[in-house]
Length: 141
Image (tube, rainbow, N blue to C red; front, top):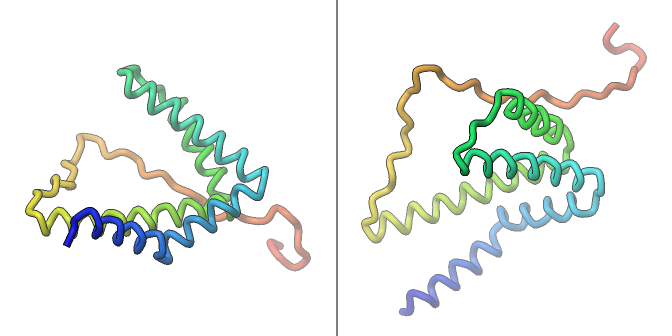
């Protein structure tokens, strides 16, 4: 039994998984919709800029964080982008499970994922459910 052959089998199994199929379909749906594509690119550009700034040791201002949070909130209202985000999360969960199985089998110690409580808890990002701005007779009276 070749380890590399088994790795290729695992890769094919992941590529054939429902989580991966969902991710690919969600990516394609965003690609086919110009508005969603532009919104997502803008959000990624902002996030990348802040990550680079943080990585270089610069301080990130509260205004920059709020701007990114608002952008991500607005982007999540788009159903195609929201589906992509959910599909990415589901696939990453599968990848994490695979990684855990492999590391456990070969005896690699998992890093402690528990985060100690900071002095001030960070506020959790919130997203609001998208609501139509169209007036419908008999509603919201």
